[in-house]
Image (tube, rainbow, N blue to C red; front, side, top):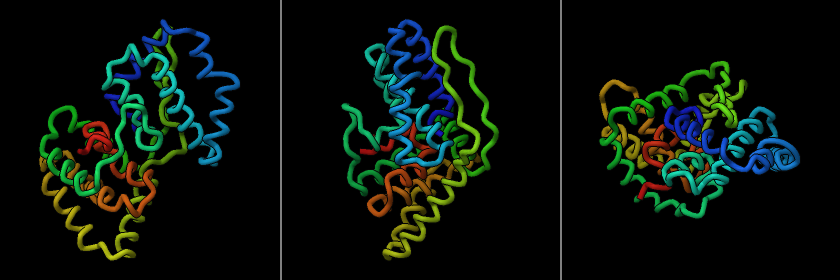
Length: 238
């Protein structure tokens, strides 16, 4: 999902251009041959599903290529490239996530600031996470650059998103946090813009995931937070 954003696509176009002038041997090392086989095997140990492995490999290659030309990227551009791995494998400039109450307070404070193109992108990602997956379309590569491939067919973010949310609700019930959990949801829904773009409920889901982060696998939290990850990176909720 992170790579389907318009803002991410713009950064990948910049990356494509920079790679056209990079050391071709280094570029090839991250896109073909033995190194790719090694990375794919390592990813496969955690993601046995071939389609998920392919998507993770593509993201890993983009990140590796971003590291290769990092000195030529602006810091926000590099952070956008690194986003899929920022919480799982923190980069040198990333700080640990703030305490839960501090993250929620920051999220509630930032929600009313969503406007314009940023809010529109949040809405599009939210809708993508609530609708069945569509057939993938390969994006054209920039001249002389490395092609960036769209989401592989077979991955359905909406199914994973719904499953993660059900897990959050069940976990809240099991550990006796349902009342506080619902209060966090309500607070986020009230703080989100009510302008018809359809992000109110998704704001509640994101806040609920943050509130329950100590009882959930981090990948579930990040998935439920995904609509807002570009506007307010999870690690930046301080």
